[in-house]
Amino acid sequence: QVQLVESGGGLVQPGGSLRLSCVASGSIFKINVMGWYRQAPGKQRELVATITSGVDINYVESVKGRFTISGDNAKNMVYLQMDSLKPEDTAVYYCNAIVIRHWPAGVSGYWGQGTQVTVSS
Image (cartoon, rainbow, N blue to C red; front, side, top):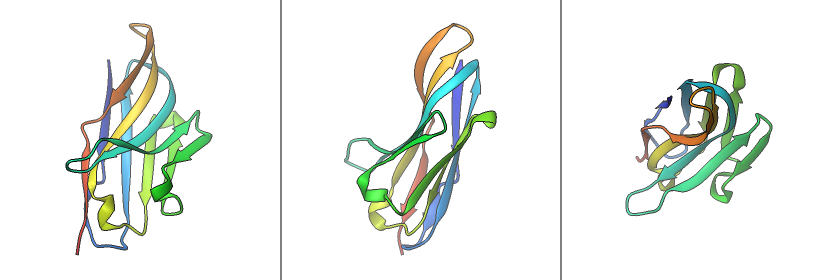
């Protein structure tokens, strides 16, 4: 029905930058919300940032001023620019989207497979 594919993770030194990308494909009429979540070993998955209708943006407090979320509605894509990375940012990062489908008609949330981000010297 709908698939999300992330890319851009990797290993980076503290203070470095990475840019994550996520593309949604399938039976999409409209995407209401796209966002990024992360899950570190032994911890629960947490919200990192979301963008709603391409306008309203929300960040978890720990990444404010360092991460920037942006979207391209025409391409069904969302990006996460991560600057000034810290070791505590190490986690698997997941893309999430709330999608209004063409067929079967309805609204559902979808997850990508995740991409590993490791911040270490």
